[in-house]
Length: 248
Image (cartoon, rainbow, N blue to C red; front, side, top):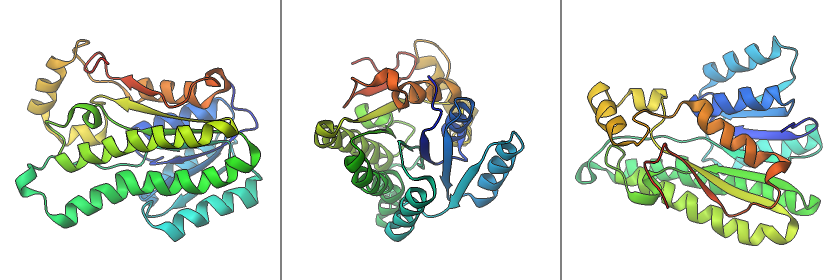
């Protein structure tokens, strides 16, 4: 599934699933544009890749801020000449009962998890539409399908929005031969789930038919498939990577 000659923007690049996706894309020789709010994590990741003689461009930005998103997309087009792949991995998750969710927390969750996906999709679609080629992969969640027990209602709502945004864009992008898909992980072994605590994680793992969490690489492998030309006739797909937790 070579990505040689392809330019990929990956948001949330310094996080668990994002970092695993970056590593896989690097192995497949993609030109990488990495985006994350975590400047230190981004710098460390970029340095590790550059040591392997890979040219990496990185941007530490607020992914929900429209002018910053536009700058990243436009700069990538100017410097790389094209954008072939967009992977929207940026996201946050909090365990808050619905009665305790403040409006500011609700707005922040949807800004990071949903508005950022909309902004990057819109801006890259403008470019991909002209080229009549592109691969867009958004990261949803099992919670976006069935609601969240550990995850807050605002997280679940944001990921449900990602799923419907993906399908809507897939319909509009299909005439231009642009593939738009989503990957919906179940609980995955990352810093995000580590923060839930051992008891919560043990209880959740027991409910998964595979009896264990996904590793970031498990999700990244699915992302790589959808980013490759081996998935050229797949669009509007919401691909579950959850060990059997959700079957539909």
